Length: 71
Image (tube, rainbow, N blue to C red):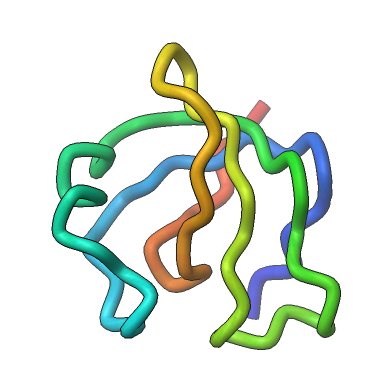
């Protein structure tokens, strides 16, 4: 399991299976950003991760739709 930390670069790479996924989030698939607020309960898959997307604002996403990008 990936442990997300503040400042890491991530991509929204797929639609989440989590109930926290909203239809409007489909527009962000493929977007890149920086983790601004990782979950606080030891990467509980049910917790949302706050990501500041490049040019698209800050949003909270389920963890299963995010992947880390190489620096």
